[in-house]
Image (cartoon, rainbow, N blue to C red):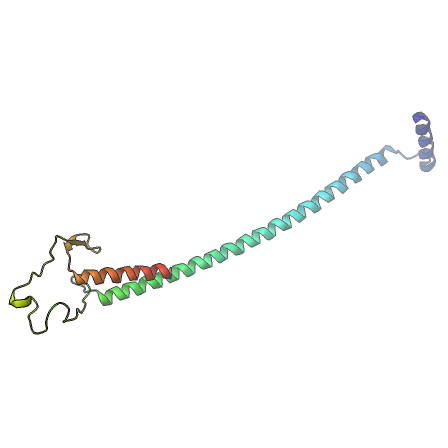
Length: 169
């Protein structure tokens, strides 16, 4: 039965082409058409993928420029905070000793009519700390004797300055 169909098909081809046209080229043309259609479909898929990648790249670039902007803002805020801290430090700290000049109330632990170095009963008070305490001078890197009330105030002030800087950043 297959031979019968083939014979009939050949007869139809001869009738259509009048026997002068080579029909093998038609088969090749159909094959080329199928390949061309497949290539066009693949090209469309690749163009869609390229558009998606382009959109993703633009989104990443936008994100990175936003991160750069935030980084610049943080750097600017840090520079401002550092400048303010240095200005406060220059204003508060004595340049010769590196210690803050603070006012201690005159009534704290002594009477206003007694000299500073006399205790109750006119006896001379010990002006040095009772224990061998030392503070590390962060500016120089050497130990120095503790100065009591000034050190407590200085420590409190420095910790609050650090806290403010941490909060600012």
